[in-house]
Length: 426
Image 1 (cartoon, rainbow, N blue to C red):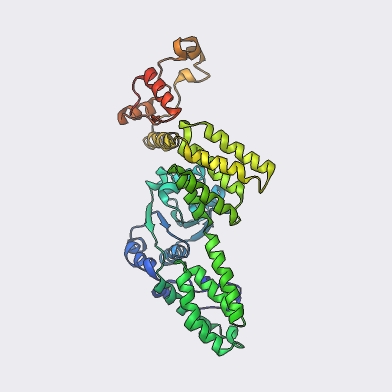
Image 2 (image 1 turned 180 degrees about the horizontal axis):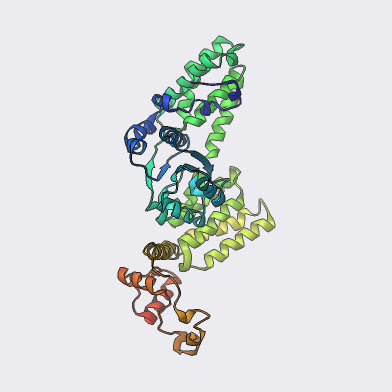
């Protein structure tokens, strides 16, 4: 590894990130993906790419290797701190087609994701995203239709151990000053006992493992090492708080109030912000319950206000009420699914140069032609409100965007719409 004096404050995992010359240090599925799936990308055929998988599996390393391999400008962004403005600036600021790496791309909102569509469509930049979330749920359908997804799996225990041995060897050979006053028995203890112990509890996360190794090396003795290890073990267990939230959401979706409440309270007991939990409930109320029970969204937003007002620990009570209600009530994702449907209609029309101008009767210019529904029986007028181009697409597909279910309140919508239009698709 080529390390200069300015890297003393850089974490060990970053120092050991393989370059093109050191690609033989790639481990696990990242190595196979580099040699097999990304061979074409490096040589001839480039494509937009999503690398998804657990933390510390090699996603960022693969992205940086791609950037190094092709000689194009490489801009690294994070969806945690960067938005549309920074993405557009990265694309516009280069004469050559740049590679724009967006870490945690799942954190982009749907509207921010939409801003990527022209970039993807016209290859204004090669987009490489990294995410720990499943792309099918974290990214919109228009994005997924224009991008290739590759899963980078967690490293196995023996692969983590291999990486740790490499890291320990690097420290002994390159950063000898760190070990100058260390007891040799303690160093042997690290090599023979700590490395396997770290690998065993790593959960396949090499970055976490290397950084823990670095912390342990700076300890003075076994007692201090034991404290660091135990604190890191608790930190590693608790850092997966998103897993508890994910489990809560999936339990609510599966109509299991006991499991949903268990994960919600476990998250709370481990220090999760109750407002973060309830925000996820608000999203769930619209995405997974929707019009089957519109009261769910009202309850979730009211629970948010209640928790803000009463604080903790009493805030756990409206949280529990909200979680159990959402888990127990009727479910429907039809309103949520309709978003991508109507968006795809618009994209299809625009890509084919078709107008999406509303019918003249719906514009200010055509107000004299507009038929006010309340002046008619059932407050309804048989009129095609969609732009002509969109209406033709809908007729060709023979399916509506919003298809109410037979569950809860939504069943009433289905009955009413079918009676009015007589063409709602089941």
